[in-house]
Picture 1 (tube, rainbow, N blue to C red):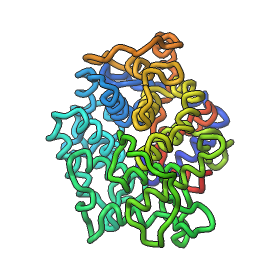
Picture 2 (spheres, helix red, strand yellow):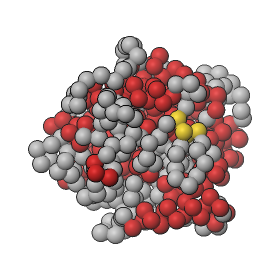
Picture 3 (cartoon, rainbow, N blue to C red):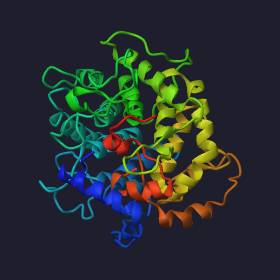
Picture 4 (cartoon, helix red, strand yellow):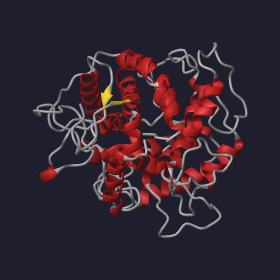
Length: 414
């Protein structure tokens, strides 16, 4: 995902390689002074709106009324044209052509503000902007005019649905978002990656299975967003149908691919070129949401158990977006986010930002002190869907990657 124009891609790859060898170089860069309404203490330059949006969404699903300051910070980040950039240190300064607005931040903010209610003007402007930058193939790229990718298109679908739109009716060049997504679906008769979605077409239009893109696209094909809930329990998904599936069948095919990728050890792996493969906690959480939304909570039970056993250290190291991802996974799979492997995820998330206006008391004792969350949040990297500028550091630390990393792993993921 080329976040600050395409030239940033090469710079980020260089940064990733350098960070793997010397992560201290990142720590040496001073973080901007942080506003009191923002969740997390890590540098928000590349993920402020993202982590804030996920935090607010997760709080809302858990019955928490977020702090007014937190909501105001998010709404204050919006540009006059309705778009959002990752972080605007001075919201009073008008956005201009150099402001790095993007579709992912905008889509996440729409989903958060729509869930909270009472922000129709803001979400309406944001949706209008998304429609204005829709590509002629029906999809969206990370930046306006960039090539469509499965992750950005899926996030936009979630934003449209959250705002009360019918995604299938949002058409550009005669094509809807579902046309763009289905063009990225790997056929069931493919030698590798059957049923999966690619991030973008590769050389000569080849489609390489990408687990991250697949988790995102399954939700979008179902017309759902980041806070999807479990569907009525059904049979285990299988890859069926010809080369022109309906969105619902493509979602089932994608779920079948994810189920196969998760079989055995219960988690996905990161596969970034030049780095050692590691368990990918963020993408595993995304897969839990996708599997539950497509086939019911039982389909997501095993990866959810793996997350309960293994993901808490990652969440502590990573910050509010990671806690939010785990809360959304628990929400989708009908698990209790206040007793997630013995930890109250909601309490931990709340401790990374301004105190909420009200919150349901914890269901039981947290096995780890809440103060630990507050002290460890000082070293957050604030990885979300992980922020790609931090990938090198994150991989060294064992941090997973979520939706926001979308196409950085464009090759096949197991």
